[in-house]
Image (cartoon, rainbow, N blue to C red; front, side, top):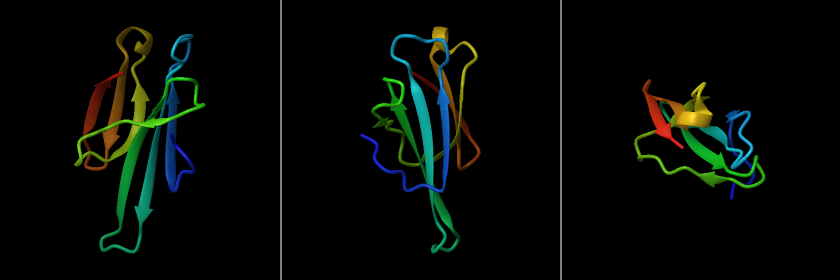
Length: 94
């Protein structure tokens, strides 16, 4: 369950036109300016009920998500594109 977000930056995407499972995805990025160099860490969350409840999506430890997009054909292919802090784009299947 997702509580209060201790984040400095969030992005939310949802899959429009999908009546069942109403998926919503959220990236929350927390920053720590006290480290040298300043660090940030992103987490990806998914809701299957339109945002009423949330669960963290498990990603490899070296992956820090910073941006989100869904496929234009999400209802058919279920693809989520995740931009990372190190400049990669991961394609995840919902």
